[in-house]
Structure formats: C-alpha cells, structure tokens
Amino acid sequence: MLGRAAPRSRRQTRATVLENLLRTGGAFRSAIARETRLTEASVSRILAELRSENLVQETRHPAPYAGGPTSLVTLSNDVAVAGIELSNSRLSFGVGDLGGTLDYVDRMPASPQLDQDEFERLFRTSAAAMQAWTDKRGIAVRQVALSIPGYGREAGNPIYPWDVTRLRDFLGEALPGMPLALTNSVVAQAAFHRYSPSTSYPVAGNHLFLFVGHGVAGVIVNEAASIDAFSAFEIGHMVIERNGLLCRCGHRGCIEAYTSLRAISPIVGLDASEILNRGDSFIDVHGLDSDVRAALRERLVMLGLGLGNALNLHPLSSVVISGWPSLMPEDDRAAIIAGIDESLLGGFDERRLSLSFVAPSIGNDPRAALYYAAYCFVSGGGLDARADAHAALEEIA
Ligand SMILES: [Zn+2]
Image 1: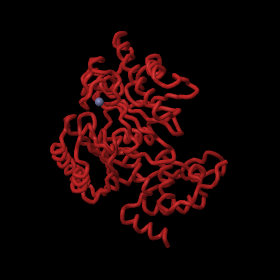
Image 2: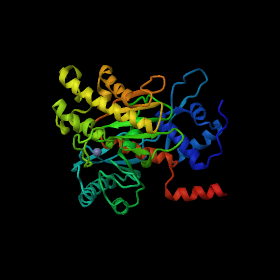
Image 3: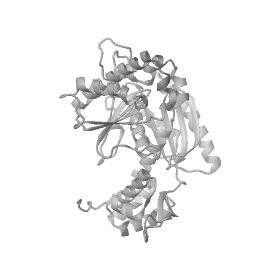
Image 4: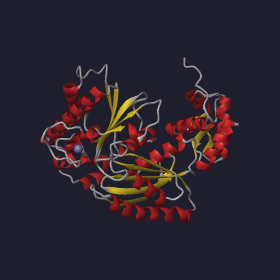
C-alpha cells in the first residue's frame, strides 16, 4: 500500500490532475483521486477551480455501476496550443487543442542542412502566417513547443550546429508573448505516444523510448521525473561500423546511416517524400520480396547491436520502439533481438528485458510537438506566467 504523497503546491496539484486527464483522455472523479493519490475533496476543489478557468469540462455520462459517478471529466477543447517541428526535411507549424486535434497545419520544405539564417527566415514567415490565422479567430495560444533533432546536448547540437542563445532570443522575438518550450525531437515523439489517445502505450514503468524515424534517438522515460531535452540521447550516432556508410553528422558507420527512414528508403525502393506520403502503410510486407526483407532484417540486427550497447551503459528492463521496425512482422523484428543478444552484456534474456513496439505515425508532424506543448501546459498546472507569480504568493501566504 502506498502512503499518502508528500504535500504538493497548488501548481503541482493542478498539474497532477491535469496530467492524469491528458494521459487518460478523461476520467471520473473517483478514478482521478485514486490515481493521483489526492482525496476526493481535494480533487473536487481543484476541478471546480479548473472548470471556472475553462480548463476542464464535465459531461454527464452513464454510470459504470449503480450509484457510481455520472460526470466524466475531460480537458477543455478550448485551450489552444501550438506545435512546431523541424523534422522530415520540413518545418511544420500546427495549432490545436489539448486532445491533439490540429486545426491549423502549415508545412514548409527545409533542407536537412538548414543553417541558422535560413531557419530564421523560414520560421519568421511561418510564424507570421500562424499568427494571422490565430488573430483572425481571436485564439490565444497558451503554450508553444518547438522540437529540433539533436537539441539539448550541453556540448552543442551536431545536427544543427546553431548558436543556442541566438536561437532563444530569436524565438522570443518571433513569437512575442507566447510561452515556448524547446525540446529534442525524440522527447516530443515520446510525449506523442504517451499521451495520444490513438496509442495504447504498452509500458507503465521506467523505460527507454527509442524512436527510429528520419533520425534515430532515445529518451529515458522516468515515471517520477519530467521528460526534457537533456534526457535525450543520440543512439543514432553510435558508430557500429568503422569506415561504414556516411551519416549526416559527418561521421561514417553511425546507426542512423543504416536504420533511419532515409537509410532504408533505397532498400524498399521509395524516396523519402513518398514514404511520408504513404505514412505507416509504406511497408507492405506482403509486397516485399524476400531479398528486401532480408536486407531490412540486417538493418534491424544493427539497430539491436546499438540498442544492446546503449543498455550496457544504461541498464533498463524495458524498451519501447516506435518507427518502421514497429511495422515489420514479428519474425523480422526478431532480428533486433539477435542484435541485442550479440552486444548486451549477458545476452538477451526475455526475463530481464522486454521489448514493445508502437506504430510510428510517419509524416504526422507537427503532432508530436503539439502533444509536447500540451504536456508542458499541464505540467505547469495550466497557469500562465502571471498566474504563476500569483500562485507562488498564495503558497507563501
Ligand atoms: Zn551520425
């Protein structure tokens, strides 16, 4: 039996309730109280407050049992958040709600070698178009998130080697008055899969989330801590073949050079933009000939080698993989296990390591950043900067 949680501030309590609603997509009061370990009285008080701010709504719902709860609490559809992604060789802007509905999407082609000047030009144009759209509808965006591959390393970003201070200053100026969270693409992907109602996320405890898309990266999802860009690690740039294939980072033999979407596109005979168009159905297993499947399995072995090595450095008992490997039949995915078995200390043992797969939603940018924006909004308790100062004063009082 778990004891009562330590006292939490008003903001933390609001954040706990809002995060529960984001994760569940809606819940009854009794379930919220149980899962957040708050009393039903506190939950009622917080919900009244959140409802008065139009952050949650309650809808009459058939009771699951006689005399049971009849009001389902969900996040309000009226809170606007924006997601911006630099991914899939494009810069995508989106505005939507906390439930992941995108009402506005704008995608501009962006070179994988985008320099900072070019990025600023492109961003400024897209940001102005987004703001014209929100202004016309009287929409106030409560939280913006921008995800960038490679972002968050203290040593700098080798993929987009930009000046981070200049980037932050620029974004503050290009999106005036909007709270902005900057993060690594893999963190946004993890938020998408964890909070999207279309994914039934397979793991509840601490685990490694591994994303295999245009880039390949991992993030350790620790249930007790918030996920941020500094927890991302660039497993994609682990070198597994000396003098191997050239990677976009400038090195040779990186995992990404063998396993990213770009790397496998010549094997499946589709160019990268065609893969984006087809989305998760780009791999038609029945249409693949045996040579192609064998070549893809070889790439999965290399992914497994890197994964086993990553787990040697940071042991975890559970890994969730999202990406094209998730679209392959189980027989072919066994190649990942073969790779892990070759590199993980002690070999692969299903009692010590569980692997799960979630479908990637290829080409859905900027939906991952939108979910990360929703995550940031609820993590802050749904309080804006001014209310935050106010809340801090209340806590002192
Ligand atoms: Zn590399």
